[in-house]
Length: 388
Ligand code: SOE
Image (cartoon, rainbow, N blue to C red):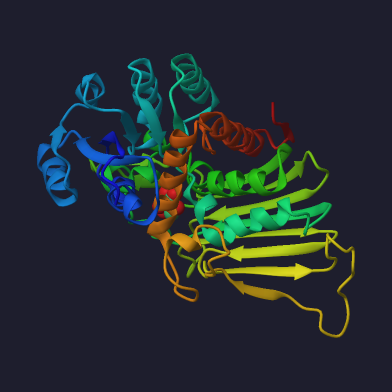
């Protein structure tokens, strides 16, 4: 690793699943990517001193704070990384931007569009670098899907089909709230599968197939009351356990999106399929090394390929020619979930090195938030809702 890299002093807030995923990325990124900056694990923050001290020791953060405001006030921090529940994103991101820090934020951007707009305006006013961790754009197979779209191999788009299904909340005994289960508590999460899972699907969909124009949705909460993990009180459940919606894209294609945490046997079943005039692509996160591609017409020659050899191709996305894969192992050797965060961080740092801002930024994540809000509004009103 080069020693003359510019330090990028990180202050991370949150020590849970995402705190770990991001910290792992900070530790590895320079070992695999040639970059002009080097993350320094300067400080981490959370309310519980025991937990954050243990986190700092485990990941090698040089110091810790028990109040995130102190982290933001510090002069020795360049980047604030928000890895906390959704209801804290807005306050932290706006304060961090006002203090002139770069801001990295976990998805979804915010609890709702109002908050997202405040955050974007603070970021734009401060002119600070920013990114939202929609990490699935950095799965090599999904990045390859984007490349095929951009190369014209799908052609005029007709259908986009997304599912994002899990099964971990089926039992009525699972409590809501607290450090581990805040995703089930509407006060902390804002919504259920819509903000947590469909936000990923929407981000991928708009990246691959362009803007969504309008939606009509149906949501359901199967377990109506749960015990709160912190108070022990049984309270109504305010999140959507399942949500499905139809979408019209600006390019004229139709979309179907399905998400639930009640699909027994599905753990992180995030799939997408795009059908166009010249070809189709299919991806499944439970089999993430592969991109399935059906070629009907070669965009360069216009030659149709429908003959007795026609069929779907299962591309093992591990060659040096594939997105990100020249940075990892040799062809045939796979990478996994954690690498999507390392790839994303490398792109963020490349953006700093080159002065070309990375995507998805707060503006792009606000679009996703607008679609999420429209979906929830439509589920309530049972009407089509336009995306502003
Ligand atoms: C929910 O279970 C969850 O952890 C999401 O919050 C993540 O964003 C997703 O990538 C995996 O599932």
